[in-house]
Length: 187
Image 1 (cartoon, one colour):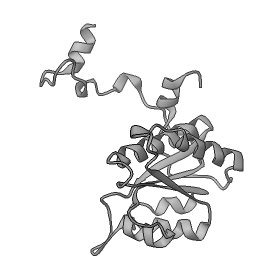
Image 2 (cartoon, helix red, strand yellow):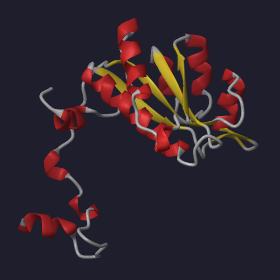
Image 3 (cartoon, helix red, strand yellow):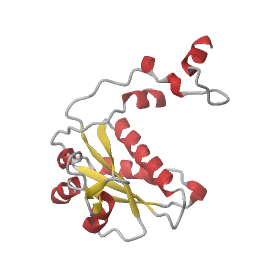
């Protein structure tokens, strides 16, 4: 990859991984990307739990029975949590760290996929986050925001198409119902 935009174009959610394990160096680089992430007021309100044990990963997949089963094939899952007592921006801090890990993984040609945990349900009377807190002994007040699955890509996905960006979602100066894409085309 030549530049940051190329990295953004290439990064796609990958849910199928081959059997190759990540090297310790690759795992370290991914975790370093999280630890290098900016945080509100430099409070470092996030925590990361790196899980490589296949049995534990299989149990993590149960936190969202209908949509997280693919992580059982991932050799690494990183649980990303935030502490609201350290910072009221812990969700944002954790989210920035999560995407930084995904971008680092893409640079290493490692696939990744975000699994949303915050505000999701394990069952009628337990949230996905509570399930993971119990499974991994994560203490309160830490709140699990997401998990990121990592693995060597079974296949590459088609890169994002820069010609299909949703410019209508961009507004210049103030929000306008007029399409921002027509403003962009004029420039």
